[in-house]
Image (cartoon, rainbow, N blue to C red; front, side):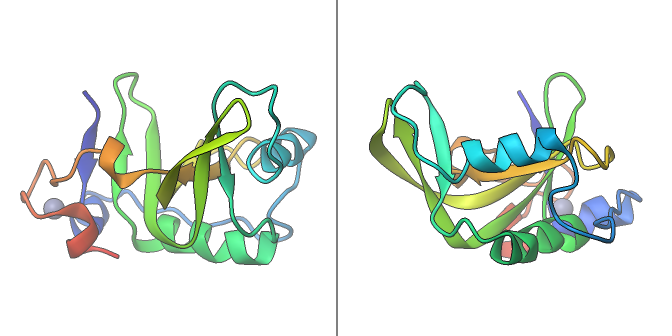
Length: 141
Ligand SMILES: [Zn+2]
C-alpha cells in the first residue's frame, strides 16, 4: 500500500522539488507521454486524459504539485507528487469516458528527461497523511 504525506509533512521531511527551467516537455519520451494523456485513443485499454492539453495549463499543475503538493511513496519506493487539479481530466477505457479525474500526479520528478504527469482520481489515493493524519488534500492544496 502506498504511503501518502501531506504537503507540510513532506516539506518538513526535506522532500522538496522544483521544475527544471525551459519547456515542460524536453524529451521524446515526455512528448509521447503528453500525447498519451491528451489525445483519446480507443486502442488504449486504460488512459487518463487532461481536459486541457495546453502545456502552459499543465505546467501550473506540475509546479503546484512539486512545490507544495502532497507526496505519495508507492510500494516500490517511487516518489510521486500530487495536486488537486483545476483543469481536471477523465479516465477512458478503450475510448469510453468512465470517470472524472480530480488530481494531477507527477511521476519520476527527479529525472529531467523522464518526469511526466497525468490525471488521477483522488478516490484511488490514500486519503490521510501517514505522519500527521490530516487529510492530504485539505492540508496542502
Ligand atoms: Zn502531514
